[in-house]
Image (cartoon, rainbow, N blue to C red; front, side, top):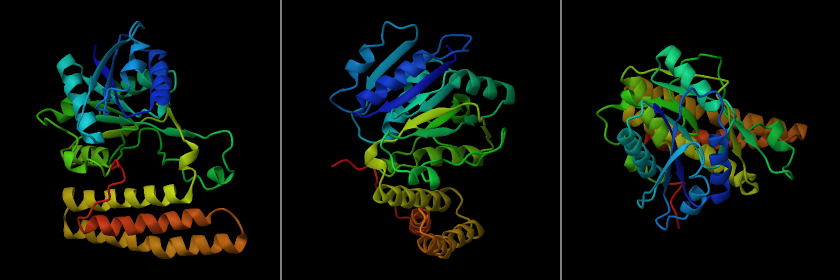
Length: 302
């Protein structure tokens, strides 16, 4: 097997079940691939879900990583993949599921381009009772790029990594970002700094199930702020040149007048885009905080 799909999971049995079914039903792969499930629940709550699929046609490896946090779980999955001798590792989240030709499309692209990594789109799926503003504001829709675009970083929500690109790095995901999120941003930005390439594959589509609990202004602002912190902090740690830091600071500051104008115009016109304006404010504030070296622990468990 040359490819492993690595899944870090924590107490999402329904999401994990949907994801595993979509992986087992993948089409277009010329050879068998491996599914690696790392359970970040010390109690091993995902084991029962994984057992439902052990007799399927795809090989599955399941291990528990008791240290809390996404970096520890993803590092554990990398260690398993290396032990199995695979060449490529795909990442997908446990609240997502893959389109039928997702993996074969991503693998074909990395083989034909020789890229260090491939990134693809994540399309949100909303609950049936969702408000209309989630579509008009597009705050839950991630940025997309032209086919074959070269990216500065990627996300483990949907990416394929050539393991050779992180050879010699025992733990590619930074454990100091245990509860902050953004360890994938750091991984892929550092890969680019070492001369690696990240290519956009628009046909490598996965879907994200957005729960009703996320359809709130509080969640939007928290996530926007954390994304800003990640950008600022990664610049400070990975590209600490005076010019780069000043440029990032200016971009963060500019979000304030833009956000205020968007929010104000939206209120005057009585449409839904004021949420986007506030999101810009939160993101800009996060960038400035990250540039000071401070972090934000969005994922700390209580």
